[in-house]
Amino acid sequence: MAGTGFYASCLSSSSNLGTCWLVLKTHNARALPGKLPGTGMRRLTIKAEVNYVNADKAKELVEVDGYAVLDVRDNNQFERAHIKSSSHVPLFVENKDNDPGTIIKRQLHNNFSGLFFGLPFTKPNPEFIQSVKSQFPPESKLLVVCQEGLRSAAAANKLEEAGFENIACITSGLQTVKPGTFDSVGSTKLENAGKAGLVTIQGKISTVLGTILVCAYLFVTFFPEQAEKLFQLAPTG
Image (cartoon, rainbow, N blue to C red; front, side):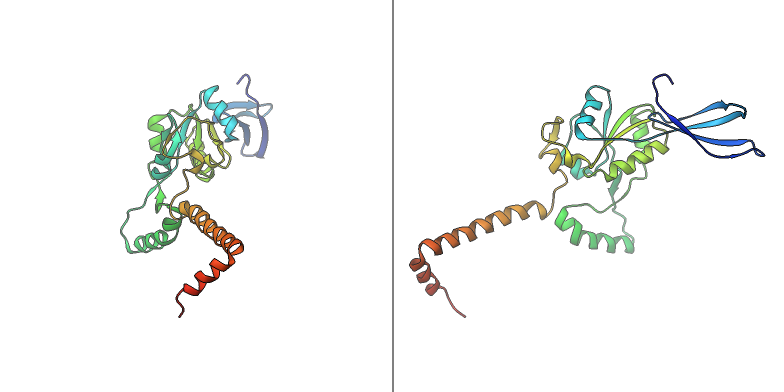
């Protein structure tokens, strides 16, 4: 354990039972047998903490420290843009169940989140951990990413519980990554991969309407006589 910083705290103890739980927090999660002075053989639990970093530090972890990128977003966001050479294991998968309750929920979802934000109707991926384990051993260094930082945090906790020892996440997700930070693949920029549905055209519509209103205002201001003639030609109810 040379070079590994940690601190210990005794959570509870019982002289009758001869037990003492010790939590050592490091960046490497594993359980080791050991002895506490004067207490005999004990089980020491070393618990890793997920390393939350900004985009620049994440780039350093990948390029210098050899972290592999694990993208846990849905298929649509991954296809729009992802970090080059990243692995993709979605934390949530599309829910195609056809029981009555799911059908109703899917319809409600599609009429709002699906329409305005382009979000698929999903459910937890039951094979998430197994899929990751099939690609990476527990000692792998993994940078877990998603669009907003919520799914990556949840995925990191699951991976930690499953025995993975070196996990990092980008705080607030790929939406905070500046252009050019990572080499990316896809039809849009990494920070924009979460934008879909009607919200993607809302800005364009606002720009067009704003331009029309400005032009109309200038026309009325500088050509009032012509504007008045046009108003007189307009049909009335």
